[in-house]
Image 1 (cartoon, rainbow, N blue to C red):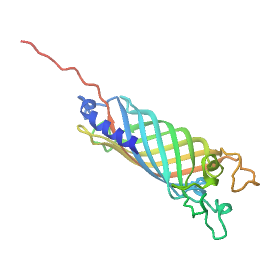
Image 2 (image 1 turned 120 degrees about the horizontal axis):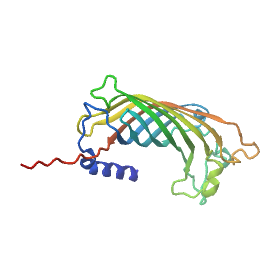
Image 3 (image 1 turned 90 degrees about the vertical axis):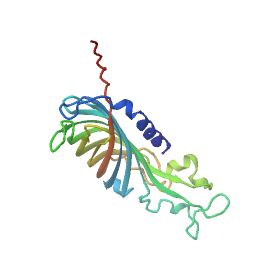
Image 4 (image 1 turned 90 degrees about the horizontal axis):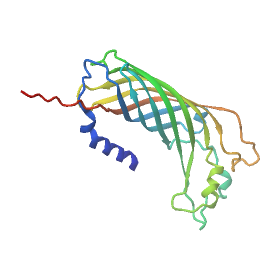
Length: 253
């Protein structure tokens, strides 16, 4: 979170230097795009067996050409507390159903979702229903890499069965290639910092279990089949185009 705050501060600090001179209304401008975005996604397929909803907090960096084509990288940090663990820790509980720490006190175990995806994206802006030639319907898609797992936290307590490498026997780390699609609208203001995009987002991961054993099911072979991890939701972003400053004209009598 501190890194995200730093990015916002630096971006706003350098805005006056990045805006430069431009003619957005009358011409299509080639410019780098750097954006921060938020997305909310409902899970489907095999992914829904682990998590019901995932938040995305991401950064997109790329270039919009003078033909309104876009290419770049889209990376997202995924997180949620909407998880399904299906009795994963039943083997660690005592007769009263509690997990105890090393001092014999009742332990607190918090499980949440963590993940990331990094995708190469290609798309285009179609200047339809737009105030200028650099705004309009924005579509992009691409492929990359997806990873997700359970984050297991024992707070300030020490529960030996869930510390250090023992967590790996429960985290269900999953990796694989990823595909995504976005359909929405991008707005580039004639002047100022009101530059944003928003729309529908979908993602499809073809993932496999990375761990070779699950400690809660030691006698059950870990599945090696490819899982279909689906997400459908929305994405909202704010970007700042970076323009070259035009040289000043000097006139002499």
